[in-house]
Length: 427
Image (cartoon, rainbow, N blue to C red; front, side):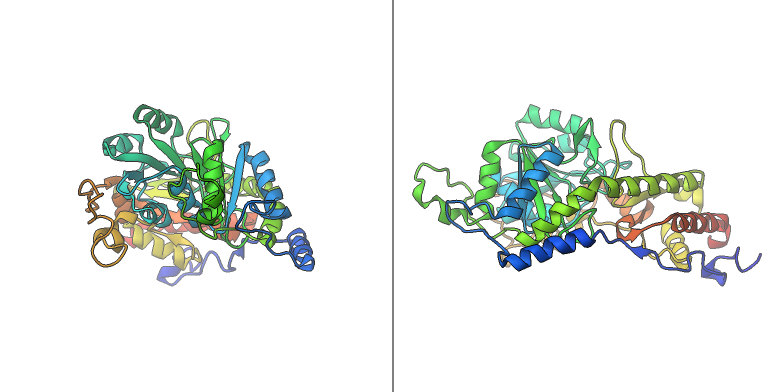
């Protein structure tokens, strides 16, 4: 066997010799938009009182109207992070301390901590192996008399099974919050992911499809929810002084406002989203074609009537077929130059905050409070599919990190094929 054929892990030559170019969506238009705002001297027009600037300035309002058009929703509300957006959304649905919200374990921790923020209790349901999104059957099994809502996470770039989840929510009178941080522009049954439930939204964090550095966009078709979101975003407690008839539920306000520079950049970024998604989808199709015949490797599955925008190129290994543990395969791929290969995502229910049930203070609050109506378990085993993926079979490539050209894609495919040709030597 020549050095070119031998695994780099075993002394051969690397397949991917040149690092992939960093994904960068910023250009001249964004620079000019930011400069225009800076030169105006008006970096934020928000004022925490009723009037013209309660909802921000020209670019905040302009970006929100353009998001409403793009995502085909009645209301878009910008926030200074998607974590802020989730906190706002949970508060807007009139959650009460001790209420339970079902959420995925296979997500970024903010999906669950936004629930804790309002002293509500996260309940973790399991995920579907093929999509990594919440399993409707597990949602149903976790509903109790105390369940108030379902937080649906559209993970890795495609929508969860919203038809079944919406039916469950309707039957049990539950609200749906869609955490579509990783899937802006993905389509489900002809509608944008994130817009199908009661309230949802997208992340504008720097490593997403489009970004403003930090930021987020809440979307909803419900006038009442939109108004509550705008209030919580901008010091609700101060705004309602002259509205004695107002509902004060969760009107603890914050400065969760996004500035004029970020929104000016966002307006330019939004124009690029369709082309950026198309490029990512084209790259994924080429990877699919090159990897589909490797034994024991399941490439990303796209559900019927859905599109995938490939924040992560997610794969599943059948260890019985490969005969090699996933950590060893990942080690070999990294040695070939595939630095962005991961074998784990996160199981949020196994983080220390939930294993120890310590959040606010040191006494187990909110779980220890009188308003917490039952002992919710976060023990290992409550989400067996998510846990098994983490431990034995998940393999991911962080497409979000790179701007991949045709040669990069050929090198990635070659690296996989080379490792698979040498599986016997990795055993």
